[in-house]
Structures are given as structure tokens and as C-alpha cells.
Length: 105
Image (cartoon, rainbow, N blue to C red; front, side):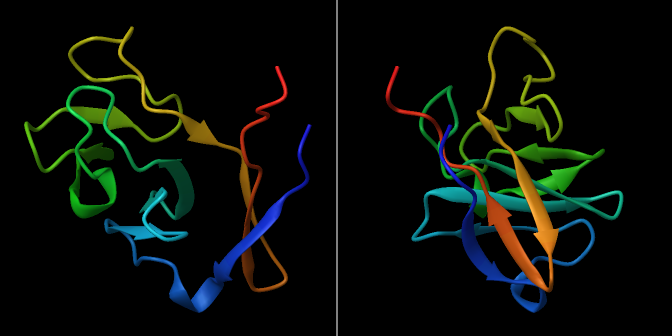
């Protein structure tokens, strides 16, 4: 399993109820309920940039067609089988760290 990778300083993270793109646009980072969630930035529906969307009812909403994803499970609101990839992450010592996907399998 890959090691955690430093993404940014804690001061660069979005405020409560906001979402942004990080890591060169590869990650969508959101703050919901005081917690940081990291998702793949590509919507599984039509490849929209989730990090350019918004937070609505605690979910990340894609700016293209409004698909909403749970920030803890990645499941789409209207279709739990459609999922955005969620990354393991931690804010530690003033920095956001994320575990990249294991591409070896």
C-alpha cells in the first residue's frame, strides 16, 4: 500500500461548506461537518470536475449535471452504485496527507 503523500498546508484547505481542486486538479477536497474529505476530482457520470462544484446538504455536487456524492462513501445520492473514489486522508502537523491509490494490482 502506498505511503501518504503531502498535498498542502492546512491553511490552504477549503472553509466549511466549500470545495476546491488540489494536486494539479487531480483531487477534490471538501470540508463538511468540520471534517476534510478527499475525492477523485473526476465525476464518474460525465467526468466533470467535482472540485469546481459545490457542497449541498453535506454532499459534493458536480457542476456539470448536478450529481451529488456522499463525502464519506463516495456514493451518488440517486444511485448508490455510482461512486466517486474516496481517498484516505489525514490532517497532521498542519498539513493534509493523502494515500494515493495502489496501482500495483
